[in-house]
Image (cartoon, rainbow, N blue to C red; front, top):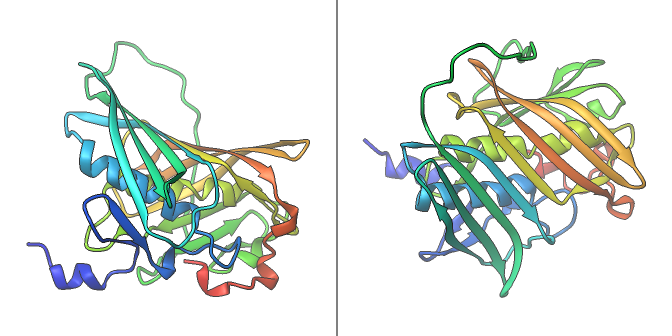
Length: 276
């Protein structure tokens, strides 16, 4: 049975005010500026809307690509969806997020019909993700690196070591528990954090996120572990592997552009209460 009162008291990034309009909450604000929505809020909303409107249990979400066109603000946000292609084995659907009539983000979801695996065996890389020893379900994020281990303070990981995080995403929309796809998308946005966090904080702002999924996550807590980070001429490319309790299940990819004027030094963060 759904506990409506309990759902209403759960933290959320948006409140739905009409069929296609969502009002950002204070929890959706980011570290980049006074009125700047965070990445997990934006990609989580797009994933939630796509899953709610176009989800099909006979298809598996395999790739979600979200282009972040401009900074989303704390104003009413309209979600417009459409079916691009509805095939027998492949479905492509789109969600555009609009603020004041202008597009701030566009997401395309690729869904494949679930089926049996082909014959034979293939190469697969062996990877390991070791979570914190004691995970507190009242929290939403742990951050770790090879030099320090696990803590709850991002500032303690401003170094050049390999990084990882463990996320329990808050609901994208008030009163609607996150679907596994929404949880995967919101957590995967942490790819930017674990690849772009350096000795002086985060100086690259990502303009997109791609989440590639072999399967959906089976747990609310999702691990994101940096795999690669390449930079040149103010452009960054980062990849990370996504984990749940059963092991790796997907990959996050972000491209980002240098943003030194608004670089986030978590040791001197003007918005410390926005880490969640």
